Image (tube, rainbow, N blue to C red; front, top):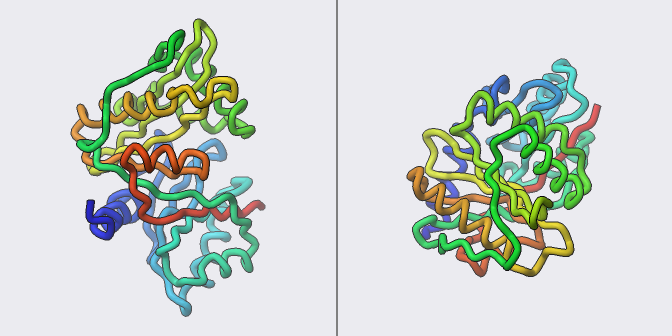
Length: 259
């Protein structure tokens, strides 16, 4: 993989040329900023910017005003380490944004990934197809990450009902109990499919479930014709992904603004 070429493609396709990630949401480019917005239950934030020392502060103020007028409680500015200007994070902090934990942007060529699914004894996979399945995904998400899952529930239900070709979610089950949940976002017109979730309950970690769900989703992305898999990796998942063939291209830090 030529990292610089792939990163440029990622910026163009997934940030500058991003499409709305769910029914009812919108993406628009205003000047050198691309923003995604919808209702309070959608993800609201800045996906891409190309600013300099003369334009950054005004652009930040404009986005704060826009999302404030939208009436949402908060929004994110998704900052990447290669974004300009180099001190954009400092400028966001000075404008009232709070940085959240940094993640690694990791990408793999799907053709280089193993797609054989090897599950531990007693675990089976269950594709998410119903509202009851979505509730199980949200339950795992909330228990693993300690975060409210209402936005995830809204988004998954809307996608499954109105745009099922844009997402595939799966549960790892121990009998009738969910122990891990993951999803694959399928972006129309892009070379990249995205991995999200993969959170595993503590008692079931270290057994290969996370790796199995990556292989399962990689096989589906390959069938759909995607060239790359992308993930925003935490410190916990980054070593596993590296061993599987993912390459770190950049880092990303969500800066949160609360009204």
